[in-house]
Image (cartoon, rainbow, N blue to C red; front, side, top):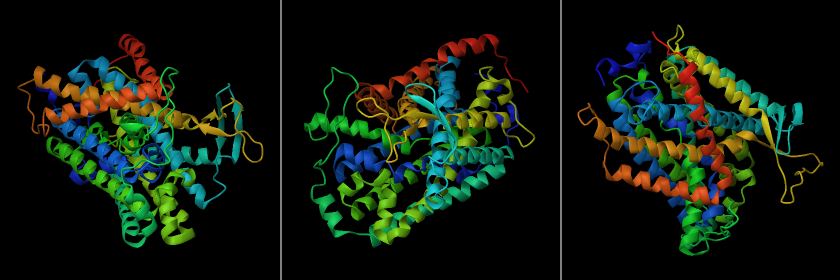
Length: 515
């Protein structure tokens, strides 16, 4: 590649390099910490059935995340351009593979996550303001088919308004976007630290400690994992080593999703000061900080609540249950505020970063040309608005919940119950994300071979062993999910595959943005 094509993106498109090391680290940590750490441990404990395995699930997620971040550090230092992972895949393989990632990011990975986090914000706001409810209808559900409906509740409306507000603020320039990110990431990190300290110091419960640490590695009261393939038998963590292994892999879905979005800083590489140094450092510092906090938060749960209480936490709100056991009835309100702060900051980071990928795609003639332009504030405003519109659309569809017999599920008043489409989309996200993480880290090896003399200000720590470890471990998890969670993995693969015809159509009819 010529020196011209390696010019910093600010020279190519007018980005302003306004993100320092602290700002970049805040984007990494802030994009990772949402509502998952306060919720998913309930489902993980139902799958693995003991405190030891709960901690190990999070520890392995941490090792995988940090291993990937170490590998991405080399790629980001080598190619410090807007678009990040899209650029790495394009350069390692071809524009097609970069597009497949960007397309999936837009359809599901980024926008589906943004929609989910927005609804999580409004859901917990509803704890403080009961009129913000999933069943307080502005437009009652309209059943479209056997499985789907659309609606607009006050909860959905607040979620959409949050997306609009954060998108507007981010169109006003990087300086405002990073200020919001720094404030809210600092606040939610402090909130998580306070929860940990309260749990470990104030909330220590001898009954919980005895119950959880006496049989630290013995699975109890686990849920059966019912595979979607008829020829595969159901299994659980109590069915020997193989059963425990399968449960452990399936449990990674929740923890991996809660630790995802760490790669978003690579999308903003065109706006990072000294990116060859600061992006690798922010990846390691941000992921390391969050994983330590996640492990300590789960330790706090285990010393505060017996495992059976964690497994049966209402609506899986483990953080709320822990705080209520410490401070009483006020715990629900305090946790609601903490999660609102967390989700607000998380969505700001996701919204800020995502539009940079669509910008890079448009510059290559592979996305709507308007998204490849910057406004007077030097940010991709059209990309931000398009992302907002699609994420808002994903908030509206509902899934029609059904019982085992296929009849609609009803509430106590005999009204039909509905889920959210984005909940299904998030199930698809994990397999899609893992596919592209593995491809990107394989690309590290390809680029070492294709471009041995390329400038590499930072080289992946532990190469080739740590990258290989990630590739093998992530591939095994994907294989298990394909076998045991087929219904929620094959659609994710289909979404990726839809990018093939779209890519060739865009190649034929798209136009490359210049200037």
